[in-house]
Image (tube, rainbow, N blue to C red; front, side):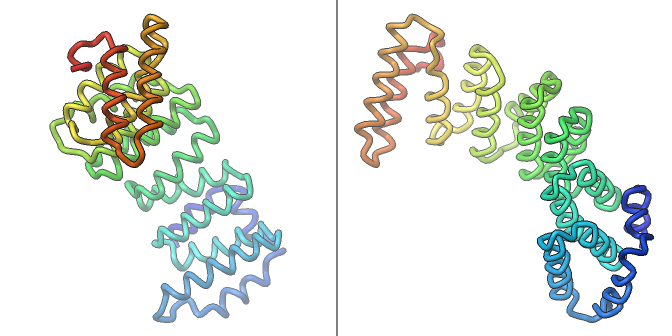
Length: 276
């Protein structure tokens, strides 16, 4: 199959595939009746057999079994994902990266594959690959793609990647006229809370809360994290006291906690428009 041929471009997998140590798997493959009609149940069973080999510490045997699966089920995303997961769990992130990049040759915009690849590239601290993934995601319009953009941005920030283009991309999402769910903006806000300065966060919060004036989690995230020691210490302490009072007396009344947070922000924040 073309999928198997692509993976065998790796010297690592090529050597395993042609190794005499796993000749018994030729007979194993013949016994599986790959062409039977109920392929979904068959594939699930075969993947379990592969995983069992890994659990029994026969990792290379497991790899060869996955190569056989690619030969017969190369079009299945599940095979690629489980193959890469096995490599990740074995601590072999370089091979996991190769498997996922090869999967993208046949499924170039698959978000499941891209999501797995983001985790691998962060582990390998590969900023160039993460930026390349961002370019792919930028051309996709689904909410899942936007969520993955935020996840990729956070991965880049954690490994010290180029945050300018990432920040610009997130600002583009925030300022877009297209309607997006509140949780997406909340995740974007969390990125800026962790990786940007106080002033830029204030301007961002102003935009976001005007998009979702009744979104409780967004307000709570905004108000809690804007309470920093950026102003007069006495004001900061008073603001935090209001916040603590709200948390203590909320008693399953979110509006009470929110009211105290707003009061604390109005004391603390120099931005009069946001305080209002």
